[in-house]
Length: 232
Length: 232
Image (cartoon, rainbow over all chains, first blue to last red; front, side, top):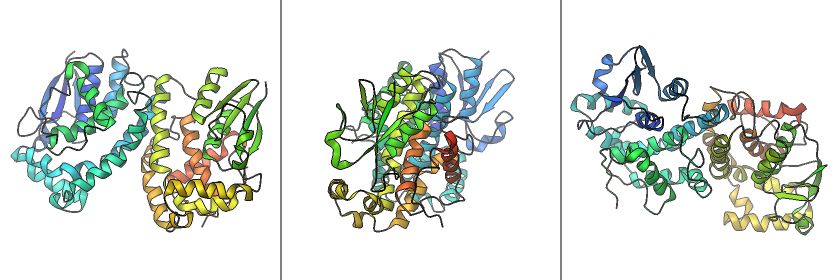
């Protein structure tokens, strides 16, 4: 049965920067599956298949609709047990802490480096919604939230220190080969790379090399995507 | 064969607060093993069995000497495969990132809350060494490093947010039951609890409840140890 993935699209429909959708595109490629991407716009929430939480990714396979990237990963491992995204129950539980580390500790620096860029890339019909919801979340204007991207970059680089130290001992979070924990980390790196010209990582950073390896996976799935980063 | 564990001891030899030694005491109990603790003092480094890196824990079993808490955990899983500390290779790799998150992101707040207390608890013969090495590491005096424990506490509580969020979904880092990833996290919490009167965690924090569960494991191994914390 064919798989459809609802994926956030920018004004340029080839530009896709949702970190949560990137997790799933990498997971599908990890499993060797093919899928059809359905461009999603915030203004078209009512067109998402039910049930959904008003966010992407949403994955549809036949009559099955799964939303939330973590639930989709679990679904894919149940439905297609080969090439698991989680090698054992314990690695899934431990990966949940890695997920929440990315979302709670690392993630907050990313809008501070690029949220105005993310908005400017969106379709006109999405911009007012994006600005309103994000300004409510941040408690300030997007422009004010992003008023010191260099300082945010320092925080971002420092927050990634555990990953940097880990890379001295193994090439991927999952060990010798990448798995879902890596697709979580990569999704956030790719969000910034695709959504903003601002270079968040320096080329002499081991995390930059890690991102390079991740970009090359699956015949360059990540690398071949449209992106906006302008490296210094 | 009997197991001996070299464990950092304070002036009161019942007071043991090394976070790295706590990882291993919990790991040994997890395996259902018994062990003899050898009190270690910084001033007696030359009495540690060879090879060692000048730090504890060092575990000795027959002719085998293993130092470094991570290497000891790996040794224990090879030597006693029952009740694994790591359920699979991937969970061990992912736990390495958790370890480095605790050491690089969470750990630095702990001396800022308690390092003068840690020193004051040490044996007289250890104090000068401790002060000298830690002041070199911090680039300032112990007293200056600990000059705003309330601010450090706020940083500590914020740094633990990924764990707090995780606890809404599962009771332990390893999932339904604790394993080595939890003993790593617990070691740092127990370091502060045993070494300083300053209450780093508030009682209404889910991380406090997690620590309570960890203290109760293995017939209260952690809870029955001498400690200095004075809860508000």
